[in-house]
Image (cartoon, rainbow, N blue to C red; front, side, top):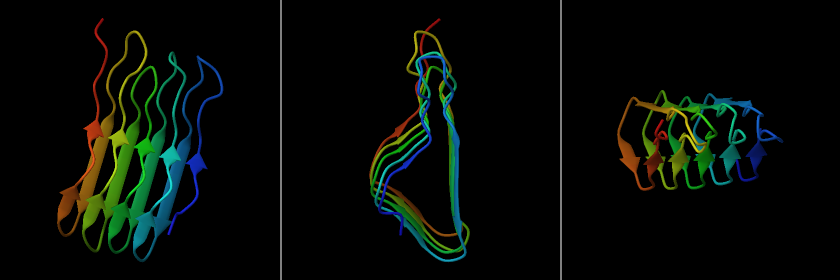
Length: 121
């Protein structure tokens, strides 16, 4: 269980979000936020959470920035349930939305929002 916060955020307007990789052979439950956010002129980070069994999130997962980042949620041996928002959006004046990839060997249940919009040029 990931109950605390994992933060790999930029610390300036031009900074890029970092990289967060979490992997376990068994089940993974994320109850604290995971963030890899960029500044308004930076690139969103990369977050990968991989479970050998089931994967459940009840806290926000954010990799947004000036350009959106990338979030990958994998449950190689079971279901995925997201209970909070997954955000890979662009937040700067201009920017492309990011990607969210969800791979499960079982079912996928989405109870939060997947937020991916870009900004107009």
